[in-house]
Length: 122
Image (tube, rainbow, N blue to C red; front, top):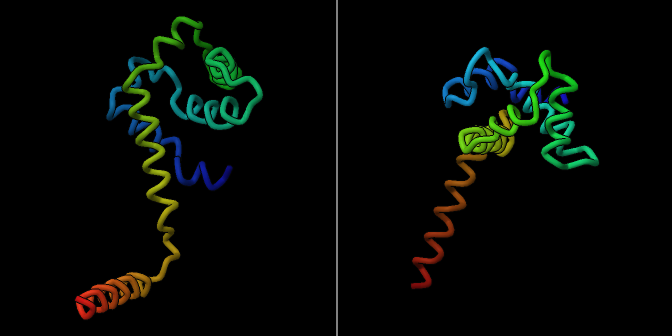
């Protein structure tokens, strides 16, 4: 969980949601709560229904959202926001900061060797 909250701090989640217009008014829904309810309460839970997702959100949010209000927030913009989060996570995890700069040189050398060997065959 620490890795996820480091990768997706609340400030980042809120700012990106505001940039995309996911949050309509009064910071509702609470974006960090919504994301963690989705990740930990809905995706990992036994009841994978939208009603279960709403219950998971309501159990941790400061203010509950009615079923109608909750479903109105499930918009194409929220879907884009979730896709952006997945992309961000993949970008961060796919090439960790611990990878040494030498790996880039290795890839260049490997690519050059491959190209040269193909050219010598032709």
